[in-house]
Length: 458
Image (cartoon, rainbow, N blue to C red; front, side, top):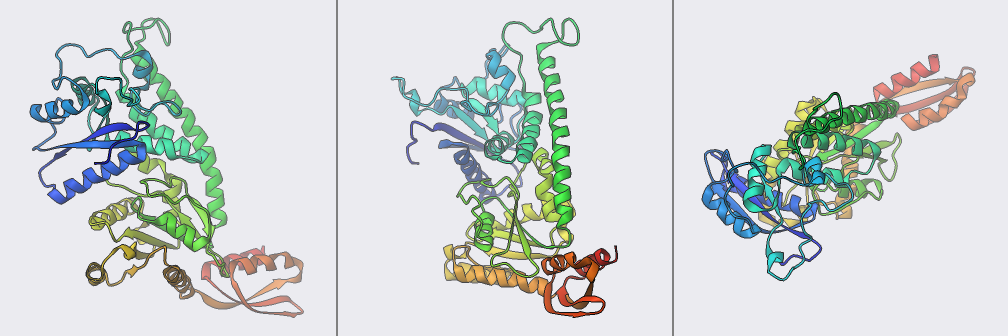
């Protein structure tokens, strides 16, 4: 592996291949964890993997592998007996690596060489499983490094990448839910004489503060989501396309290509966490709105699935879902299954969908032909090919065109202000005038026509 830069900390990946998990799946999961580590700012220097019937109850992996891991981190390689070493008050209250929003994420050294070769060691252990707080503590004591499980890695990435107020609130709730059971007693005694009564344990006090903070965040989130619901309600009869799929499949690249918007495009997992809605460009009549949504991933923490309500609502209320799949990824089938599973959980399986295999420019002719035989109803395109962008745009337009009907609307002269709304909601074929008002021949979705008629009659 390439050498790490001084600014980036080093990490070791740990994975256990459990029964029923194939070699390909196991290697893919570890490779994905490596990409998550890179997104979080770590250079992976090694991977420690082991086949087991179950995770070791004490420290995830067996004694031999634990010593191998400790050689990479500078630890003793055994879980010491007796009480665990006390952490500093700051680290105990943080309870995990990603607790600081602005400071050093790890609480360890910055990776610079102190003269004894320690710079070559890893300061972080990333485990490709969800592990208990006690397993994390034992691994830390045996390795001398900080430990994050897969859930913690994802939560930390979300914490760093969220930009909008809503996304930051949602991520903070998920982060605090992750932190609470992992809090550790501060050094200097087990109780403080303050709080709800004499003798309230410091640990319980900290957890109560977290519960109170979560309640405050949820109240703020409700107010923001009401505003979002109102905006979505105003768009309810518009033509809406939601780009959905696995993280890093290329949704943001398609968003930029289809709408001309300057959304972030980066070769990182979870580069996009905020839902973005833009009009299809060049604009159509009626307008087609395209939304870019947060990507899914295997073992996505349930708190984060639940918290990203706005993204899921965009998918649920869309007129068309475009499943974006990375055709160049050998595990694309498992990634597609994850996307379909999450959308099925929220009832979005009933929304019409289109399967788009992206990044086909990275495939040779044989691989592409094989995919086309397996997925005959899919389309195979690249977001970087202008001709392919035009193809997808026309496919979207044709989808909605097939569902439109021709009708005639009469706008009374007393309500001529509504003529502009007709032009926004429908394609106006002709416009005439008589004694009753403006007579418009339109082509639009039945729901949009019904809404316009209600507005005329109101």
